Amino acid sequence: MQDKCGIAGVYSHSKSDKISRAIYYELYALQHRGQESAGISVHDGNEMSTYRGMGLVCEVFNNGNIKGLDGHVGIGHVRYSTTGKSKIENSQPFFEEFDYGTIAVAHNGDIINSMELREELKQQGYEFKSSTDSEVICRLLTKEYTRTGDIVKTIQKVSKRLTGSYALVILLNNELIAVRDPMGIKPLSLGKKDDITLIGSESVAFDVLGGEYIRPVEPGEILVINDEIKSFKMENSVKPRRAHCVFEYVYFARPDSILDDRSVYEVRLNIGRSLSREYSADAEVVMPVPDSAITASIGYSRESGLPYGEGLIKNRYVGRTFIMPNQEERENSVRLKMNPVKSELESKKIVLIDDSIVRGTTSKATVDVLKEAGVKEIHLRIGCPPIISPCYYGIAMATKKELVASNKEIEEIREYLGVDSLGYLSVESLVECIGISKDKLCIGCLTGEYPTELPADIEEYEAERCTCP
Image (cartoon, rainbow, N blue to C red; front, top):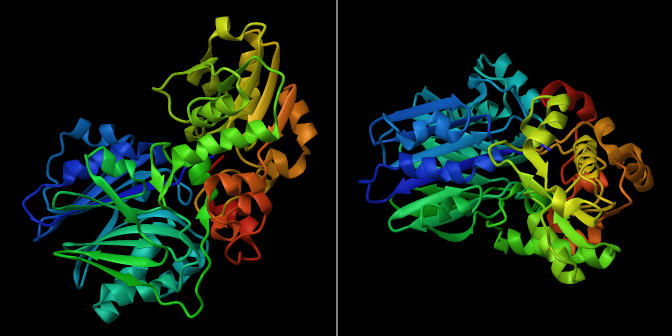
């Protein structure tokens, strides 16, 4: 699966702090959410400065030696493309000058009706520099703000046009605005350090600064941050349901994060415990596919009484396998990314824990590596239910025909992977592990039932729009 993006915002109320380095460290902590490009926009009270580049945060910003980005308020972004190709024009924040000053926008999410909105704006004479849905949001904001001169009314109006998911940080002149979509699909949190207000996709963005997590930005909330912090709500005739993304808890978020007041680490421990109760195994040791399944493996070990061990050592200088641009490279990267510890594996019966199976090709390659190391039996346990449908809200996981569970039964998947047994966590158990009721979660990829209405041609639209191989 391909991760979404990470966003950050900082406002110094004393106006004496140069906050670009704070944003840099926030983005560094959120690097797992996007490794294609990074960018920062700041405002010093007189003008806006922006710098963007392709690559990791440390590469783009010269290991923190940031020059030319002086200001007391700013936003930042790390990107993995779910809409638009991987190129500098699609990196964020998007920024532009207009009649009322300058605006920069950083977006995490996916707007399902973005192509329709783009065509509408083009017909009105607007030109686009990129191919992403995030620039569409930026254009809609400047268009509406020119009419109203009020950022809250502007966002309330624009939000009614958007179908999909979005967490936004907006730098309008020297004001910082944070926005979360009405269903709360994408995470967004509020924090502070001394006289500095912090915004981040995850609470780890605050931890790295020695800051404090305050609370989540609520679904449908608009925070306007200047000399003070004011909260507003989007205007909806019908209260939308909540639909927090389950994969933030299963895989995407760092385990040391807090999302919507829930510890991701505790959720993953619960997943491991539940897997043990649902699918015990006659085995000698529990081992994770590093790194995202480590916490669940600890939970499985504690619940089952089986010892925890490490059979695969990760090369942490290699990015997540989904970052690779094509399937062949993803498969090859398994050997580069993970090396077996033969002394821990040879002639052993192991429980192997992984967070999910998408296409199945990476899982199969991992199993092959373990077998070559001499493992006697592999009992594979997966920390989420079978993925049977694509995500249309910011996770470019695959098309439906590429999802191994969309056209194979579990026994067929077991045979394809070559494992001795295979067990997926049930939907009911996953919901219980997260601790949020099922009607407040987005589980469309697991059930095929989505929280928003989808266009009739959504699969054709995804094939045209999605750049993932």
